[in-house]
Image: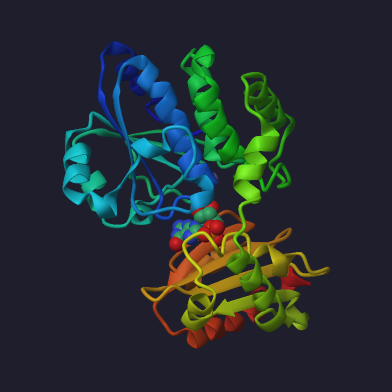
Length: 338
Ligand code: 5GP
Ligand code: MN
């Protein structure tokens, strides 16, 4: 199931001569998006290439410490420089996404750029914008694929501590700490190899997960007490968070990360949804268990997608209307929710 379209050409180009390379990842990068991007960065600079990671937007503090984080530029803050880098790049690595809409305004720039677009990704239903790919929907994280890509290049010895740290963060966060289904023996073998290269799991875990601020914990308590709704007949639970709620607790990018897992942790719940009014749009995060394919709900109703059990999307309706769209979709999938 590995889609390795034209990847041999990429290898030859990487070996042949120093190139100008842009690495980009999806809007509001998470641990895997940034970890895989910077992991690839630490590898490619060792081959002598000129490499720039461009994030479409900002990202949360709990990942803004990865080695070489200070070299990352945000498109929104460096538009003209980013445009030039994209236009001049020989290779554009697109990590952890498979639709150009996931990188906002950068999407059109990448689409029309002269450089070869190389997609490394593990999501379903690719758009097909790429010229080359190293993609596998069975992978637990894009970081797993970057690891395999480096090994496939014959360069395992170039996975230094900085590279290994970034890849470990990607695998740790996308697997929910080695919990999800696709945590195969191979994933643990890769993690073991990264630890053998010097990664300290305890330190990484602490930097990622033990960084709560008081307001965030209080916000969590408030949401659990006031916002959590259960729809017993559909084994579904959800939370709808308004702008005022976010403002009251001074909630920023990334502070709602993981919140959707609380409704899913209720015994018997098969579908969980977090709906957040982010002012410019309503953002939805869906999680499920078993056969409930949330990527299909996200694609049908919320212009989104993702994985079968973890997907996202958005809406330009009001918060209440969006909740209604979600609730109205439930009867359609009643059979799998039982
Ligand atoms: P999250 O709920 O954490 O934002 O995202 C969960 C999963 O759904 C991630 O794998 C992410 O890539 C995907 N996802 C989130 N939002 C969107 C979206 O707007 N469009 C698509 N296609 N996928 C999304
Ligand atoms: Mn990922």
